Image 1: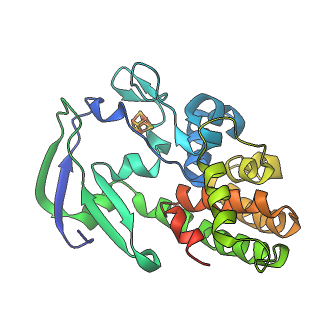
Image 2 (image 1 turned 90 degrees about the vertical axis):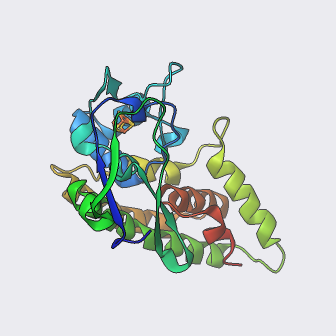
Length: 244
Ligand code: SF4
């Protein structure tokens, strides 16, 4: 579906959609969750996420870490995926949008319809602010790739193996190597970028990350961070790997 396609959804606040999911978070999602929860990003990462801040945490019971009863405790700053739900967003070549209607969660009381358009739904969920923020992080993936090109001699190092290693490292659920760049992607405070509003934090974070990437000399650290950032923004690892 595209933005003009017919789609509507009435949420009945039953909380059933907030269970047993895998929800990828972007750096901006983490900024917003932390702001809404009134805690530092590091505390939000510890409380609400797994895999270094890149995935929303769900308890053994299946409940999202932010769910209390049927209520989302970070509703005002809920992540992009939760705003889009029950739509999925895939990215085609060049970042082209393709929206998918997701199946209802078991027992969900939400009502699907066609009384509006995808665009109307996105507007109601204030999705564009999140998409715009993510679009501002996207050039950092390209910057990381460019930085890697200056550090690695791909005449002597096999590029596919290099990127396979980076992907394994980025997507590991546990036992991953320390990566200060990935840490800085999800915790703007590590770069001294926490400001009074999410918008100001976002601005400062983007500039500081740019400087941090250019100062990083370890290509493996940058590559894992590039894959992590691409995936967190909704792109496939192949988008990074496929560049060579
Ligand atoms: S963050 Fe909120 S809306 Fe998203 S899954 Fe958790 S409880 Fe549900």
